[in-house]
Image 1 (cartoon, rainbow, N blue to C red):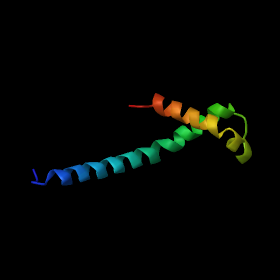
Image 2: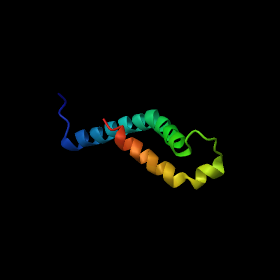
Image 3: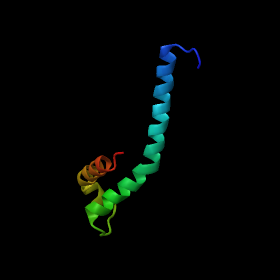
Length: 71
């Protein structure tokens, strides 16, 4: 085992956590965002104006899905 001081181990842990978090966000966020839009619009077509008007509902649905998909 390397003889590193505690502050280096903490820095390594922070960087590793940021890398893993970024990877999970890049992997799973588009799927959850798409699913939230489908739920809010219930399969109906939408454009940018309808999406902007419903953004609060979309964000609430994304938060619900994130909480439901926690490991």
